[in-house]
Length: 123
Image (tube, rainbow, N blue to C red; front, side):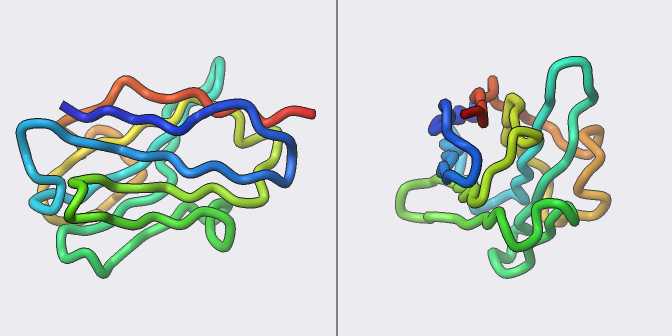
């Protein structure tokens, strides 16, 4: 089971760190992706970290603002969100898949999903 946390209300330009924790399995054994879904829109892939812990992929609009990382000791994956904009408002999800991040933005390639955490960027 995957559980996201860390969402909330933040002003434009602010930052949040989202966490994805797992129970029952080691996140290090999987590639992990972050997605988001805004009201009335489809699920959008933001980033993915491969099982090798070194290869990370980002949506173009996320490059330079969002950073994904792992904490093996805590069995967690993080998504640091900086310079947030109102258009970043969405429910953010983490998801697990085997090994690689090929076509990382396609939710069909992921097997397990968390319940999501709401991020709202507003003044």
